Length: 150
Image 1 (tube, rainbow, N blue to C red):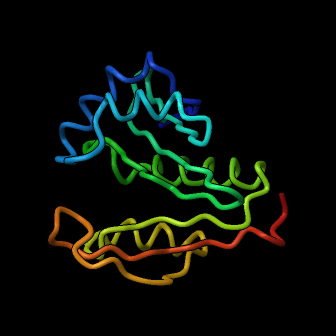
Image 2: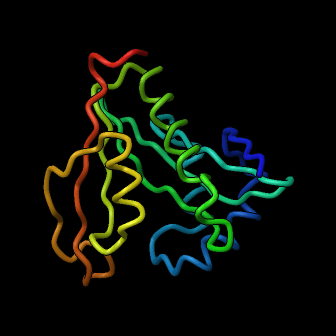
């Protein structure tokens, strides 16, 4: 499966709507993402397979640190390396911007995502109680970038 990663544009939002609906997310929607595309501190990418958007991911840059807002893969395309490619690209972008570290939150029950982040040397640094839908805790994970090859 060939996966192409490119910068998200408004053109991609229509396809992303389908992915958002299947995620049951109460915050992230197409209008929020459209506003994010106008935010100079945000960078969003999409994963494209066979001409269709199969995932998206975002990075905020408050000051000299990065915050991964989300990495979302279409459910029927998971386990194909799409999230890995998007995470690699976000880390590459963060290094290019000379950020000191990248942080994210992940649902404590999302074992696949936690495994992926640990594979990229993210470390658990804290917890946010009831972060997801006021029920599930989030792990806070950080990857230091200072000193890594850029």
